[in-house]
Length: 490
Ligand code: HXC
Image (cartoon, rainbow, N blue to C red):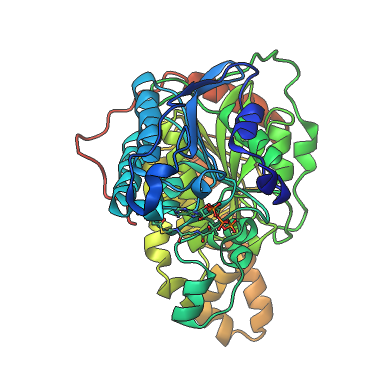
């Protein structure tokens, strides 16, 4: 325990103490020991075999938990250690409650060989069966290496601690041998690396207590299982007008601003919990509440790369949309998108397949879905960002919305190319044609004429309109064609 504390880490039981409601923890399998005898292992038996498993409550709601104990064989996973985790997962599935894994392990118990690998696979299989049935949350509180990373990867959210946790398929030594790269554990697979570069972790926290607090906060937005509605807090309706929204956008259409300033003004005060904050910052996703009810928010971020859709932002948003849809969390989209990012890097790395993920995820979602177009909705991105054509229930637009194939400047250059190049003053002609296109399309009214936009609303009225619309959609039921499952472009 002293060694654990010296590294700035808590022990498994301390973590559970901070995670669960006081006196709510009931341990299961406390006396389990391993069955191995190779390498003199029969002389080294420790009760519990390196993992503390059981159930308890968080804010009076049932959760199943396992916490790997690094003080016993480095938290490594033996056959019996795996059986204990599987038992918790089976109980969670049968009783419809979330599973929380606190990971701190040296991986497969080396002395046991293949049986510990089998144990991992038993967990992966259960993770997959449980996906979409109960929320699964993984906190990485120490090492998580080799194939062990694939259990957290299948779960819904990963939380990591800066400087004391890492995840990688092969560690720095193997990397050095194979690719001759010299890299530290932290750089290769630390919290910041996975929060910014790979997107593997959804939350990078400065210490373990922060991880635990974040984890509890995320749970507060989620139902216990896929059969339950998302939780709702008591809400006393008052004056829902938000005058600030009438002036929140910059005058210049091309000027960046932080979409969070719009989100935070629209949803319930202090209710925004951003997910994947440091990754693909051109899209913002997270949980919030509207009139006390959980919602999932997806918003283009004009403050970063002009809010363009690219490979990483499409993947990030698609995964979040699918999570919310699994667990009955209605979707609210804030749209201000200039289109998809051009370039060889994007094309060669399959923006086609990856952009399609977001399109597929929205099209597939059956929860109540509302879009608010605040400014640009250009090109294919208009279709993808939860348009009515792909099954959104309501699309609202602010008067500042521009719904068109592209911006007026680019459009004029293409369709009036000849006229501009042969004009006496090409620059003047270009401006004239830009204005012509802009007058026609740089507004929400052409789309509203078609019914693609249900209503053009005064920004200050946004909360009221959204609250009414979500209430109207509360009992939404959608029948989809019978199938085993779709084939999302992976
Ligand atoms: C058995 C292990 C162990 C393991 C650590 N220990 N990992 N015992 N199996 N996998 C033991 C150590 O022998 C030591 O025992 C104690 O745990 C603490 O380990 P230390 O090395 O002293 O701790 P530290 O310096 O913090 O280093 C932690 C570590 C290192 C980086 C995790 O222990 C390590 O590299 N372990 C091996 C990691 C590994 O290769 N695992 C297999 C990965 S492959 P004593 O008795 O001295 O206290 C894998 C495949 C999964 O997991 C496949 C799924 C499909």
